[in-house]
Structure formats: C-alpha cells, structure tokens
Image (cartoon, helix red, strand yellow):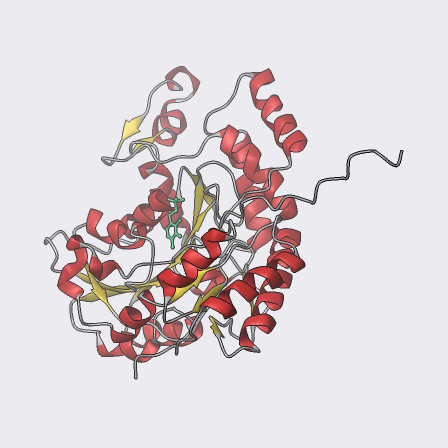
Length: 392
Ligand SMILES: *Cc1c(COP(=O)(O)O)cnc(C)c1O
C-alpha cells in the first residue's frame, strides 16, 4: 500500500455567515403526516406548534404566522396604536435593525422616531426617554443578536409613561432573561422562524400577546378578517359554511408545512443555542485578548446568540481578508436612516451611526467548530484595527 496516493488535505469549504441545520428525517416525517392526511394549511400542525411554543416560552398566547414581518404588523394593528392620522402618532424605535421593524410602523401610518442605541446595540433607555412626547404611543424594542440589552429599564419607562411595548424578538428564539422568555415583559412579542434565524423553517413567525382580546383580533386579521365563530355559534351546524368579515384583514396566517418544520426545530433549539454560546465564548476570548470589542450580552441574559459581532475600524479590509480565506461575514445592520425612506432621522443617533460603520457579524452555526472560530478570529485580529463602541 506504500504507493497509494496520499490522502488529500481536508478541504476548508466556504463558511457562510448563516447555515441552517435541518433534521431532515424528522422534518420529512412531520411533513409526511400533513401530506398523508391532506392538510397542509392553517390548523393541525400550526395549532400543535402554537401549544408547544406557549409551553416553551410560558407565554399565555401564541399565534403562528407566515413571517415576523407579518407578526410585527399584526402587533401594531392589534395594539391599536394608530389613531388614523397619517404620521401623527409616534413610536420610538431603533435605527439598528432589519427594515421590517420600522416598516411595520409605517404600514399603519405611525411615525418611527429613532432613538440611539447602547453598547448592546439595543435601544438606549436614556435616549428613549428623551424622545417621548405627547404623540408617543409605544416603544419598539429589538433584541439585537438575541440579547436583551436594557429591556427591563425600557419596561419601566413604558409603565411610567403608559406606553405600549412591542418586542421584535426575531433574533430571540430561546433567549431567557432571569430564566424567563423576555416576551413576558412586552405587550406583544414577535419571533421570526425564517431560514437563517435560530428556529429555522423556510418562512414563518409568531406573534404573542399578553392580552387575550388582542390575540383574538390578530387571529382574525391574519386570515382576511374572517370570523368563523359568529355564525357557527349563533346559527348552529346548518350554517357552518357561513362566516362574517369584521375587518379588512390580511393573508398572514402560517401553514402546517412550516409548522411541521418549526416543531422539529423547537426540539433542538436549546441545544443549538448552547452551541452558539460556546462558539461565541471562543470568539470572544480570542478577540478580546487582542483588544477587540465583541458586542456583549447582559449578565442576567442567556442569549440565543443569533449574532456574534466584533467592532473594527477598517471593516472592508477585514471583510476582504476573510473572503480570501473563504469566510463570509455580514453586517447587522446598516443604520436605517441611511435609507431614503428613513433619512429624516439622519444625524439623530450618533452611536448607531458610529456602530453602523464598524460592526461585523462572524459566522456562527454548526459548521463553525471551535477550531474554525479560532482561525476566523486570527484573520480578524491580523487584518483588523479595534474600534470603540461609542462615538464619544
Ligand atoms: C429577520 C428579521 C425580521 C423579519 O423576519 P421575517 O420572518 O423574515 O419576516 C424582523 N426583525 C428583525 C430584527 C429581523 O432580523
């Protein structure tokens, strides 16, 4: 065997920023249930998943929908935030987010008022308080990267000023604050189960209200405003086909194929998030030992660790250096006030502007082993210049 060809060295494949891990056989088996009984739509697996999500989060209600964007819109609608005068009612929100967050306000004619972010890249409570006026109706908080930032201080501010609180928890599936799902602290919490989020399906999400009536309104709105209950209750079985339409609703409900995927992903969510936290601690020790700042998680928060973000002064050089080694990082997010839609807020959030040019999200999924995290960190520390978290 001496002249046998030498084994080629292990190939390092390209490392994407995100790569969902699907448990294929389990997913196919759950989907097979739907196909065999001929039920792929709303109901069946969506109801099963809603029960499981309530049990997992401890929240009183859960409505499975087709995306977090829809969930956010339903939250804004069901909370009744807009009184109908275009851009007269305001919601204090973050510019450091995916545009869905702020579009959901615009859908209802609410004006997003941008407050600045803190070192966690989440809304800074002091800045929020400074932006409250008599037009303010609510605060929209994004748990960026999965962490809770200073959410409890935001809750206090909302109580003090009688403002509603929406939690964009798109990154927060599995996050716990003092052992509880942070959804307990908000009037409405919106989760994303999009393919690259922590509980990956293809596209789906959930909106969870504390108030049962808001949950009922959102359920009607997510299916064109149709109310099946009124006729079947009042007229009996002969009118079971009848329904009333009480609102101009939307086609936002989830379906059983997505719920089948979500049910399987939920079984693994805690383990997957534990892996993410382990990888983050490798990155953090490698990077901080060389003087780099990694966006932190508050001490009392067990974060889903959706993102691992490092701050660098020379981001495009670092991205190039990583790409040369087949590592593909990302940016979460470009400050929303850079977009023409939200340019009216330009200049109002100096920390967010500073961070928007310096944040870099590093790959964090099951193909990223601890050794890979060390290798990637080395590329960052060799090519990067450390940046400070604040503009002051
Ligand atoms: C992904 C994301 C959304 C939208 O989620 P979809 O399920 O894709 O609609 C909203 N907010 C934030 C912060 C996100 O990252």
